[in-house]
Length: 299
Image (cartoon, rainbow, N blue to C red; front, top):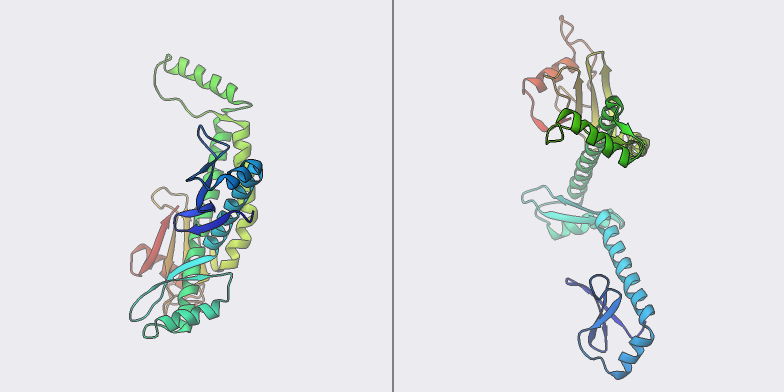
């Protein structure tokens, strides 16, 4: 399409022929047609009419390619703050040489950071991002498991939506005499199967992702609760706690390494005559807020 000039700017992608903007109307009453902002000349009008299907396909393919590139760029871009005397918001493209980008950022702010400090800030940022993603994925898995369990225990799973609607109508007529009132959820087999499929896909990928970024240092699973102490990719300590008791909600805590709690801690070693361990001390310090908690996530 050498007759058509493509411009991609702040206002989006635009197509021109002899100075006139040509656009494809994908929706609305004029869907499937081409529009011109002004007359591009008789010869160009004739050419457009003769090549309308090819022009439409060119515009659609060009827009799709640009959107795909924008999405790839967004996925590969990491935004983070540099540390130092003055903080700066910076970006790197993970598809390109990272060391060169760290050096360029340091050159832009020579009084505030070095290439080494920028690299450390970047690694800290992607570590925190990985923790957020792992927590979000874990929450999705828990929600799906809860939905499936609730549906299976309810005895209200039906083969089709029509059957579920009819069961819901009968329940309302019996318990609410056809008026407004509480009606439990009625499920379809396809809905529950869809949850199982999503759960299978998430759990199939969750373990490699989790252990890629997090190293378990110590854990314990009891009948009424448990915990796991991990070292995250960015060097912080993650403490997962869970319990069967409602007054002890499941939670995840993130703390910085300290002299008492770090990668070299022997978590099972008794540190006094009472048999107290570093694990017990850490859980107590978290519970009594004797330690600085960077972030807390309730499950």
